[in-house]
Image (cartoon, rainbow, N blue to C red):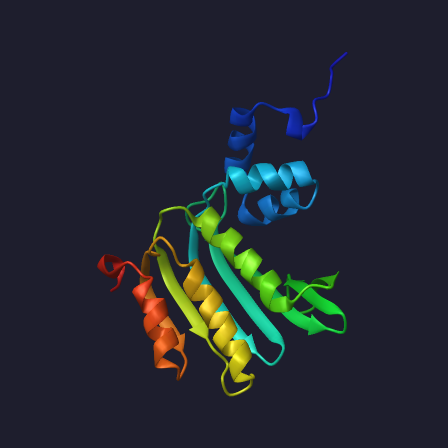
Length: 192
């Protein structure tokens, strides 16, 4: 007869080894299963290979797209596409799996800007020390209230510490101060 050990009761080394074998999407799913796993993953973030990060700010919506390497593949990029939207008494987060398939979660009492910021912080924590191939930020100034754009760009710039290693950067914004703040947070030796 075999005894089953709950995942959270495994030794830390075994848990870290399991997390190394999981791709980013699997780690995010594990985070949702219990507060103990969420805390463990926060304290011991797995290092994934994120190649591209794209952030688009639109009217009451923030779109986050990632390209990352799978846990067992050095060649294939996987995509993660999440849309954060303002909702009546909170926000919604949509995980877009395909053109026809979305998973939606309603978060009552939460701000879509704060939920995006929290996820963005987690992503940068998982990235580790590798350089990104590309960081793309579209402030959406044409479609968005200036204060939302300013808040989101400010939050992104705050989180880029220590200096983020990026090969290519695209920032669409007319706010020179925000652009300079973001560029100041990038490691200049890695820019192409």
